[in-house]
Image (cartoon, rainbow, N blue to C red; front, side, top):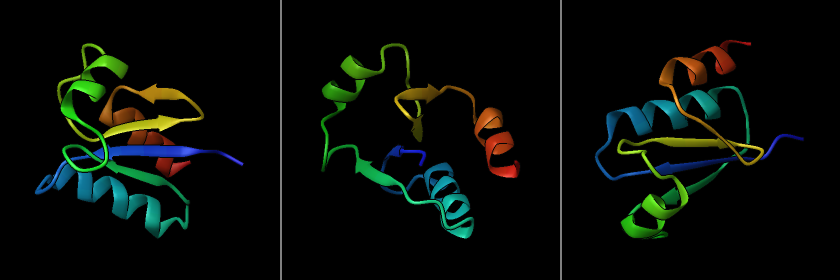
Length: 75
């Protein structure tokens, strides 16, 4: 089974789209809301160089490009 984590922000349209895509495919995931579940500093420490949300992690590997996530969902 694949383990998916998604780091999101409130009022983030791309975050909502990513979660909807996962839900529509019945793919379980764990959501971490930046500023509630995890601090901004923790995110910057764990994902250096990443400045936008959502951050999608599949089996411990960060999906860095939105297009890569979209391709993964189409498979």
